Image 1 (tube, each protein chain N blue to C red):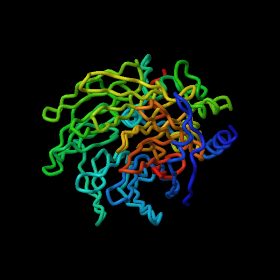
Image 2: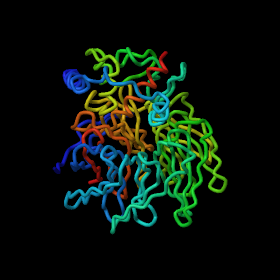
Image 3: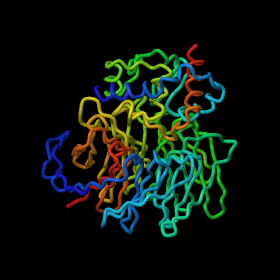
Image 4: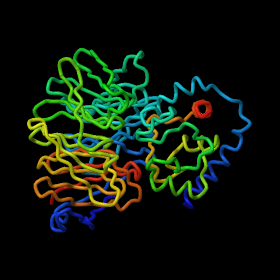
Length: 129
Length: 320
């Protein structure tokens, strides 16, 4: 938990400018979400995928979606205070294992570009409304 | 960098078997940090190739020296699967750039066969050669396909239940099967028409992740959600299922060795598990690294290789 908390603190510091950054392109985010699509959905009720449903993920405490079996690492991170918001999602999509050591989530193709991550997060935010 | 380890824990459904575990030697090889090795393949010459998914490289390990070379696969690369083709070369499902890739083992030339653009991003996963020299592959976003390297002809089909196609294998008899993780089934592919026939495992929502064949053409399935390993016998059209040891196992990888011993990776125990189908007995080999995250296994007679994606190591299990 200490590791996750430290990583979270680093991530928040590194992304502290994000809230004032201009909103990007949710439509492009939908296209980029194809890199997440194999494991995640934003469609309500689509809950038998390898990863948790991401509809309404912003504001959710990590590791707490009812009915989904999270890794012990993700549950621990949530218990330690990790809540998904624009900053924490950005940090997680940058390097999942650095943010939550032991997470089961891989990031097959990665989202190394900040603009890509911003677009995906915009898409998730839109999908949660 | 190299260490000999002794298997320290043996679990069994039918009694402990420390003597059996003691017959296995384990040797680890560190690979460049940050690569997160996903899949591994060993050639007849003993050279080991692995996909450094995070850094976008193909890795080459010479186990006799421990030397590792990295071959860059280009901008945006995030390779997932690697196998050794009938030509002795490593073949890759290159998930980052949506292409099948061959790397020449001598010149290290990288040759690419991109998927048709109209197909979009497939999230390429795993590949296997049939007995006719064609390579079959899966894409988790809901496709499977076939490439004839001789002609360059590539066919891509929609998977019957959409997203999920993951592990794929060829039996000694030449049949091709794949597993659908999100679809919780396996499928047999018609080698001529490409049609996939779904075969339902007995456990509902089991999360069939990878498949491998034993010498008799029976299909072994690692079930991520259920924590089971199951076996499909095509001749009898019959299933048999075993649950791995532990309270809440997560079965990720499966590989059947030349003696028909079934090797699995189990994430809850952070371990590699060997299953003896005759004795119905499990031997558990925990990693000495936290969160080792073995996502695939592959071998050659006498040795089984496992990439520890969470520890940046390759591990080989050998019969003493």
